[in-house]
Image (cartoon, rainbow, N blue to C red):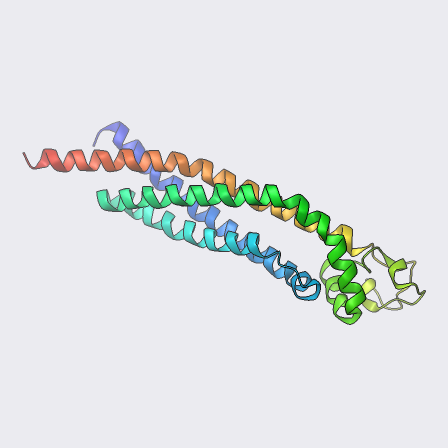
Length: 219
């Protein structure tokens, strides 16, 4: 194996090692967002789980395919390398689609948070306390949402909760949460997709080298 092929082989190996870690990061981020958002999904009766669930699925698949790519690079298997390149190309398209959907739908999601929380607050205040505990907030718009000087314990860090030591409103906190973590998922997906394009090229180059070497060995 020449110097160029040697570099491609080990660059592909280490790039896939990075992919495996990035896939785990995307998986972990999706799990975290899903766990944090579950109280909003259940209480507000809205579906905001598409992005985190997709991130978990894509992250897990990226990890498995990256591991597959590492094995293909080290073993110099033409079949494994070609299969790996095709799978990575499909994953790259999936992640670009995911990021596009996040960036297109994010404003609508954030703008709708106020309406969802107002309706949830009016419908079931006991259940709304779960959102307050999760996001450390008080009422949709702050302590004044309760129209009372006495507030539930979920509105404050310490008991004997009142308007002087209450958290801020839940709308701002939940909006900031979805804004930050949806952007993080989108940016991470695009970053991984960009590196995957390089991996696809390297994978096909190494597969071509392995195929040519196999042909030469027959003569």
